[in-house]
Image (cartoon, rainbow, N blue to C red; front, side, top):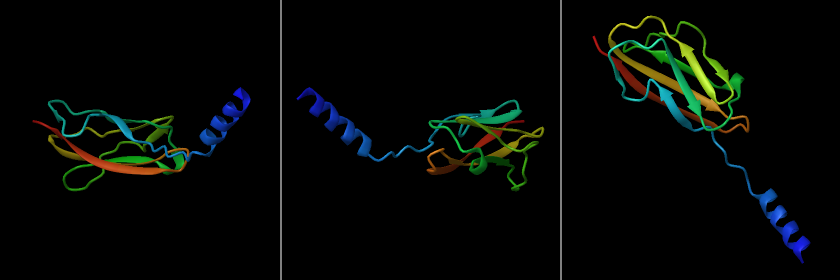
Length: 115
C-alpha cells in the first residue's frame, strides 16, 4: 500500500508541466531610481538560470543612443553591462531573458541621473 501511494505521487509529480520563467528579482540601479551619482554598470538578477546566447540587456539615453561600454555579460541567473560615463539625464534599461528551459521574459524600466 505504501509503495503504491509513493509510486502514484511520483507519477503525478513527474507529469506536472514545468512552467518556470526567469523573472527579474532585483535590478541595480532599480526602476525609477533617482541617482545623484552615475552608475558604472547595470546588474539584473533573475529567478532562474539564463541561457547566455539568447539573453541580453542594453541601456540607452533619452535620444536612444546606446550607453553601454561593453557587451552584456550573462552568467548563471544574472546579467550585467558596464556603462560609459553618464551625464545627468534619463536612461532606459531594456532586457530580455531566456531561461535554460527556453521560456522568454522581457522588460524595460528607466532611471535618472540628477545633476
